[in-house]
Length: 344
Image (cartoon, rainbow, N blue to C red; front, top):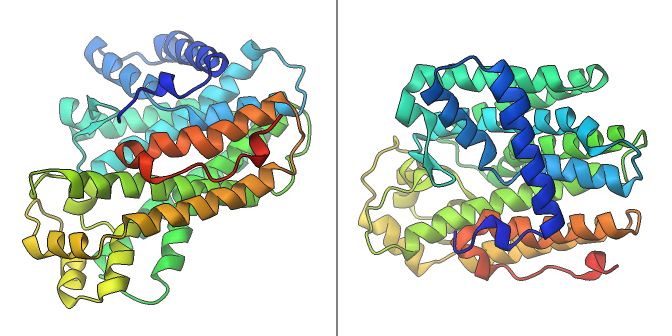
């Protein structure tokens, strides 16, 4: 990424996130994870280097709805969201054969596949145990949907499915893998405020989950086309993942060669013709345009939420900061969608 997360996020949110990271390291991992020091160090790095999108969402929604709870009493609920999310990322990294995340080696690379699976299960169950009992069934349903999304993505590739409903499949998988937990984060914020969720929370979570997945796809595709080495190993490209840029590329050129490539087994060898097609029919501007449109829809929903300082902060993060972070080096392709909901 061209900039650090701290350079994007407002100082008050950075302070909250620092306190949440300290809480997870000291009160949860330090007390409940009886692991060898080397593995515990790796787990701490994985857990504390994320963007904290979901717990920050819950925190700001709770504040927006006027919670009277102290920040310290909210920490277990907020940590539960992040731990569950990080556990699914460990599984994702194993499935994608990724070598690093957030600039550090993945646990399965440094400590082996078995250890990574055990660690993922451990922190996921820690997250579930921290969740309030009245919200636990809902969280379990979200976790099931997360795995349905991951499994659905694998099945689509394994069966070599190419059909007109591919974009519908893509949206559904993005919802299961990303938007669903985002909606739960909003519900958790309402729970912490002893209030009902804001209007159209489901629509907002679906829009933001899809937009962030598109940003992540755009970042991987951008890195691949921007690098000097045509054979550089980018996980999505190596794994023949049906990302949005690849789907748009296939829709544009309808190349049987590209279709066979996407349906082939994952491998580090990328045919030159694939990169040539991607350069000739570059889908990046179209993806960026689709992201802007979705963020505009999200902005319209946020404009209906309670108008206070915390809504403003959440709007700025959700519509400007987090899309830029997910898009990484491709962030310049995405302009600010709308400033309406960010006005105080």
